[in-house]
Amino acid sequence: MPGACPACGYKTPTGVENKRNPKEWQLSAQKKAANAYLVGNSLTPSGRAFSNTFETYVAKTPEEKKALAFAHEKVDTLVDQPPAHVYFTGPAGSGKTHLATAILLDYIVRRNYLAKALYVDWGKLSTMYSGRFNLQPDVQTYLTRLMDGMQTCDLLLLDDFGAEVYNGTTTKAPVDLANTIFNSRVDKNLIITTNLTGEMIKEAYTQRIVSRMNAHVSGNAMLFAGIRDHRATA
Ligand SMILES: Nc1ncnc2c1ncn2[C@@H]1O[C@H](COP(=O)(O)OP(=O)(O)OP(=O)(O)O)[C@@H](O)[C@H]1O
Ligand SMILES: [Mg+2]
Image (tube, rainbow, N blue to C red; front, side):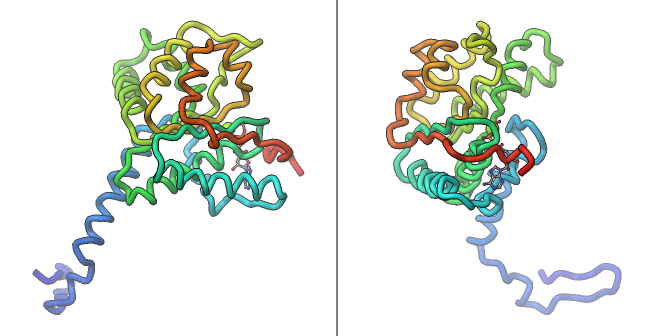
């Protein structure tokens, strides 16, 4: 049925209305669903979280070029050799979150939008989880859905893991949370960014958690050393 404009009566000539083929329609539907899942379920620190792409990353120094190349390579690993645990550690403002998010977004594209991926800000999550018995019913429902998604999705980005650690320690709720999540992700794709060293994670969360985090980390860890703090003024 050709398209018609109810206002002016113009009718699209028969035969030219169906320019997009079924494959394009399907891809467009998959894209919509993948984005709706990501945006609708992710727990982000700000609405700008998904502007961190490979296109917006500027690699000027050799260290930044190395980090960018490593991040591109890790998309291949996550797509072609799952499960992989990609681990970015290093100082504040060095681009860990930026490149981790870029990997997540590119992974979805490379999986033809058929993969479910989630971005979760650990600081926000651990605060929500610690107060889980006093949440508003709608937030409680969201947390239950998020917990389920984090344990089952194809790729989980846990951003700023250990953000709540203070003076080398944390509390019971984040340790329980980490246990639940890392247990469920042992054989699933995971990206972790953190300011903590392995020793600090062991100290705050126990060796049991480090062991699960490290399950598929060999060749997938990067220390963001020698990169300036991009938040500080130049
Ligand atoms: N090479 C880069 N090109 C463009 N923008 C960058 C680059 N590196 C970092 N940024 C920007 O600088 C800001 C800080 O980077 P990012 O959030 O990735 O740091 P981080 O290493 O995750 O820091 P933190 O440990 O505090 O979480 C972000 O707005 C990010 O988009
Ligand atoms: Mg960060």
